[in-house]
Image (tube, rainbow, N blue to C red; front, side, top):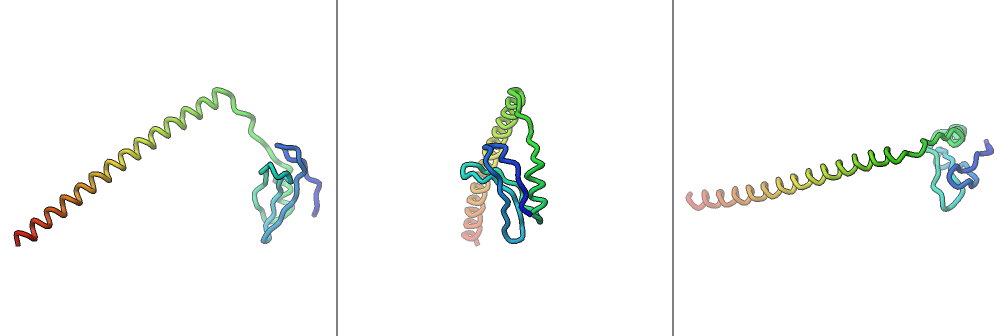
Length: 110
């Protein structure tokens, strides 16, 4: 099946069917564009996926700000967790050193 595919929605270049190892997908033919469908079992399904593209509308400034705020909070939380992990690792190393000293002292007293 060689269907006439809609052009790429991003750069308006021609689209092409691809196959490899019994799997199929459609992609933009332009070297500068990475538009592609998922790999599927049939060429027909790949064509349907390419032709049925639905794209989310652009985000508003407030939606972008909200996402940025959430990412910043997540990054701060991640940093806090990483600092806590580093602190716990230092405590473990200190306790291991102390245990080694105690073991040496016990062996010396025997």
